[in-house]
Amino acid sequence: MDKLDQFLQRAEALLEQVEAILPAVHVIEPDWQASIAYRWQRGNGRGALQPVYHPHKIKLADLQDINEQKEKVVRNTRQFVNRKPANNVLLTGARGTGKSSLVKAVLSEFSGQGLRLIEIGKDALSDLPEIIELIDTRSERFILFCDDLSFNDAEPGYQALKAVLDGSVVALSDNLLIYATSNRRHLMPEYMQENLATKYAGDEVHPAEVVEEKISLSERFGMWISFYPFTQDEYLAVAAYWVEQLGLLPFTDDARREALQWALGRGSRSGRVAWQFAKDWCGRQ
Image 1 (cartoon, helix red, strand yellow):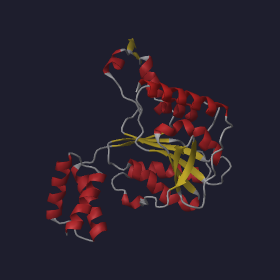
Image 2 (image 1 turned 120 degrees about the horizontal axis):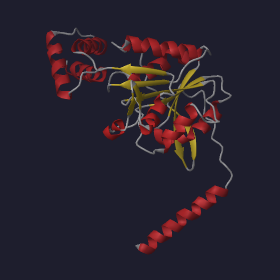
Image 3 (image 1 turned 90 degrees about the horizontal axis):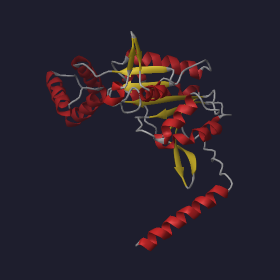
Image 4 (image 1 turned 180 degrees about the horizontal axis):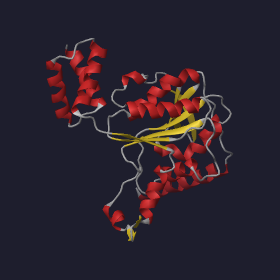
């Protein structure tokens, strides 16, 4: 077994040396007419944009009780589509409140005006320069979508995203914005000992260097949009909306009681939980 391990290690080292001297493989041009949404995938040593043939389509009107957040994201996206200045956006807050759905909804709203979406996982963020080069000469407007983004210490994607957002010699294309969602405001875990290292000089607060480093990534997003847990009334309003949409049914007292029990069992009141309840309720009716 030890000899096999040694052989595999030597084979891996040899492959790395061969890859280093091979000419760079250009990214394959995707079929831009195939879809309005694409997913960046890496395999065989190179990345490619794979069309999403059946993207999740959701209307802005379907997103209830997040009107302020909708207004800000729609306004920013409209500016971008109209080739006016616009910001990269970080959507943070409670789970299930519509962060990802809002990004999908603006794609549905503006796809007819040339908006396209590229979904990328955090493990592929080091490929951002390749994506920028690939779309640089395209006439479409692209949102690079990073869903449920968070980093542990020293992950390579953290530095790659930070550099591209602000600080790298590789600038974002004029036709590209980054929209990211996260449950963490600063995208990285925060520890008590880091806050204890904060210093005070009179009335001034000087955060520890490690805290400053963690904040520095989220600060490079020009727009922060916060989402909050739903109140009971907000949750019931969303549940009623989806019951009426899915089953064309009135939201009766029985449905109301069942919706509250459903939320209690899930330990959460959110748009996602309301949607899941409505599917179960309408299916049973």
